[in-house]
Length: 206
Picture: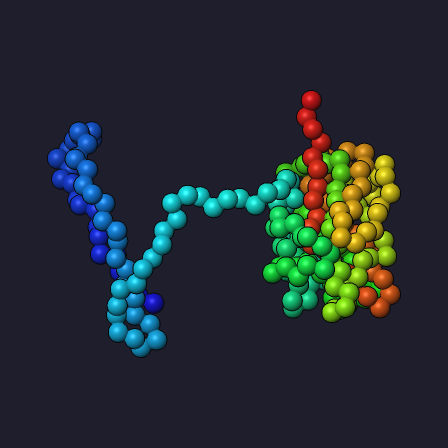
């Protein structure tokens, strides 16, 4: 595609003067764009330019890290796990979904890695389940681990690890400071699993 801009800013004479009075303003003319593609003749086209910044996705520290996955199939999108798009139910089919299909009955994980250490106190997960149309079900079990040096250690959970459909599954734990957190899970026999969203909560500073 060839794009041309019809309006250009006027050049000002330098005259060795660093500061000068502002020039009278002129009415701004909308730029005109032209394109030529698919062997078509050049012609004008309309272009809409944003006037306000895009609204950022809601979320906390989970929106910042790099996402890693133990296994990525051809149609798995790991970045869907922290895109901030909350599901209405476990059966929702989002545009981007983090899952481990076609693996079944195995141990899998998804990992957040931050550039700087963070201090966390809880995590919550919304599981994907496409009963009736696919092969993903709730996991048999799950747990949270944190990285200390080169080792992965289990967090000291103060609550159970719930496994529920159509709801957030939250676990609280003794705060940990780390650069990486891992959501580890055991898949049900003969079933895969997926995650809509995985959120983490930072320890409040006094």
